[in-house]
Image (cartoon, rainbow, N blue to C red):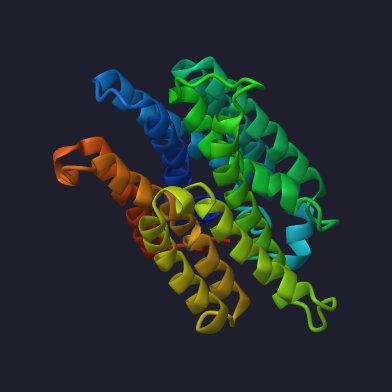
Length: 317
């Protein structure tokens, strides 16, 4: 019988508090596709959305187990509290979990749509890139950010009915701006954590990492401000408020700071999904009579609240 200590260690390895944000990221892509193409509220589509969210979670969990497996020697010296340094599990077990979960994630995404399956495979590739080089350089924050950025792309490609052409690049700009917003936020998160922990960070480093947070917000509103400026500003407010709290109230200690920024990832999604949901509901604005619109509106804030609650149970980092 597995002990409570081992269960807590497995949850910590999986970074359980960050799982709701993964679901939120996938739903961002589904919501963006619905805005462009509509969403048929059939049981088949609802099941496909759930399966695609599960695929995203499996890919994320796979990356975390692979990361801890690959870092096991480094963790022996620097993170002895983790499961593998404590010899709670065999290292081969972690590698097996990583392989099984990534395989299931790609399979589920492919079952939903071939395009989303190809995107899942791309996520797996960038997980490998990040895992291999993240300890020795700064640049791996880019592949890590790409993994997050591809989650809404996976949702978009599974449900969009819009074709990408050179003569009509607007759909590519539409999804690309939102995906880039997530990438930039994750890069800013990682760099902020790295520089905040340094006794003497490079000149301008903290300013640059903070600027990335501002850039992320601007990218997420890029499409919405010209169309629905009041709603775009409304979507930006929760993100801005939480960001200010993180860089002031939660700045120290570093784990608290990083946990706060990680919990804020769904609020990056909400910058777009809040105006999107309200736009989908117009002109009758009967949001709660439309289950899909209600889900688009509420999943990001619920993911934020759930993520923060789960941080009381286990670590997010």
